[in-house]
Image (cartoon, rainbow, N blue to C red; front, side, top):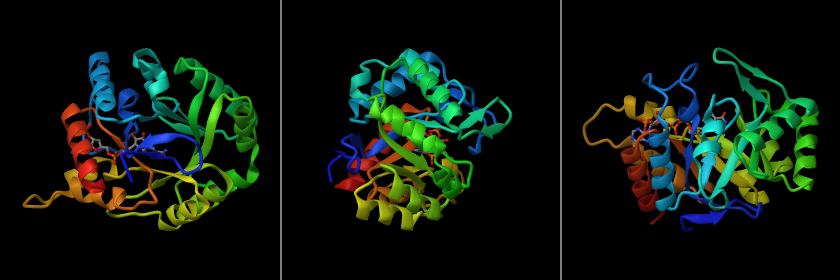
Length: 263
Ligand SMILES: NC(=O)c1ccc[n+]([C@@H]2O[C@H](COP(=O)([O-])OP(=O)(O)OC[C@H]3O[C@@H](n4cnc5c(N)ncnc54)[C@H](OP(=O)(O)O)[C@@H]3O)[C@@H](O)[C@H]2O)c1
């Protein structure tokens, strides 16, 4: 498969490597190996420019990522060149997360994301699971509201960022796309395979174990970032691996490794 590929049957074309943006807007209550300062505007501009010139078109954000959506809205140029992925259901107040999958909250959240991202459509909206994936999907209010936005053209595709493999299977059956954990230690295989059989989109989060793959490396000849990219992108049922970074050199290296994994 080439670097740009269809996201299942959604009609969206996505790059094999996407840019995760938790670190654009949130540095508390996160599980990265080292503390970090939020980036300044120029750092974000440079990351977006390197991403685009490298062929990356997927940007993954969420209301729970602090100021991430707002900053993307302020700094992103040529919105039509990007596949914007955001989420609903999780809210982070700076200290704690709370979850709300009601229809009313879903409507407010989508309207706020459109406003913050300064756009009149969202390419993909994922339900940001609290861990009880199947209950959220079966209860259905959130999904119904997302479908209403989809009918009106404000959302192009609907999916779920799951926390369980079984939830991923159900999400693949009910929705257009699923975001799963897939790395050297944990692989949501059943969800990925079900999505593939049904022609649904598959995005991967935490492919580098939120940076721990590198921090846990023992040195020597091991290159666990390379191994991770090969494991994820070597699976042709996976359409886009979303990797977070604040470093343009890491981003360039990730693109090189992604291209090598696909060669
Ligand atoms: N929906 C959800 O529930 C959920 C949960 C988690 C994540 N996500 C999405 O998935 C994205 C990725 O997940 P993630 O951010 O948790 O973890 P990740 O992509 O597995 O890892 C990101 C970490 O790896 C480091 N890194 C990136 N490239 C590297 C390289 N070439 N060499 C060494 N270190 C490197 C980054 O640090 P530097 O900044 O130093 O490069 C960053 O701390 C998120 O940004 C978010 O968009 C979604």
